[in-house]
Length: 249
Image 1 (tube, rainbow, N blue to C red):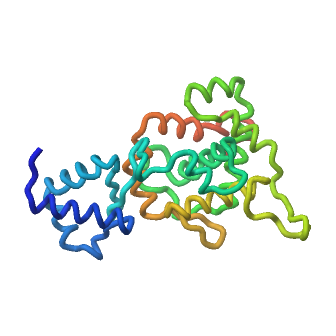
Image 2: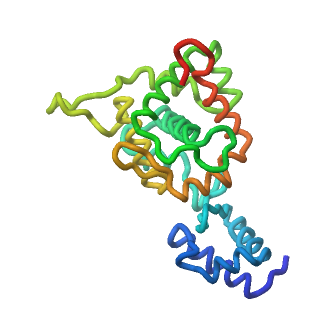
Image 3: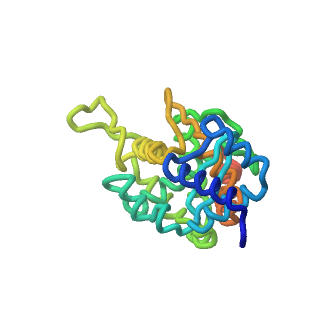
């Protein structure tokens, strides 16, 4: 495959910038962005170079971001990396529950196959309430283990862990103060999930509300909604609580 030398040089510079800084914006690189918009070959070269590193180029508004491809051993995170990043006390059940909370958070922002988020912000209390209702609805499924196998997602483990946790836990040396972090309560686990997403520049929390970053929106546009297994899991989670009774979410 042959590319124009100048386009190849610009694409490599853009890729280097994204690897170094996490993104490249029109504001900081107006000439490169203008050429990116006008030159189809430049877009092809950049995507080709990223693909060779098992990376995806993701765009949101006037910025480009990189997302690791599936099983990217260099730029991606393994399950072991994720557990270590989450901190002490996180084993597979806690990690799977964090993944579920992230799925719920995304389905709250994005309705069906929407290209842009439905909400500007999500109150943290709303996230806690929705996770609680969906896991309660999960417990009403006759064969949750079978659903877990079919969707390759550990719903049974998540349900059992979440159901075993108290809503909050108070500090031993101060019975009036809640433990904000850790794995010993639902409240703490939600906080750990948000902290993990903040660490990876995917959300920010302000005044007890969660906001998606532009990086997160770009990755969701490019990756999340276009993977069949993710679509199946998302549909399953969205349907939880819509099976009737008092569990409507």
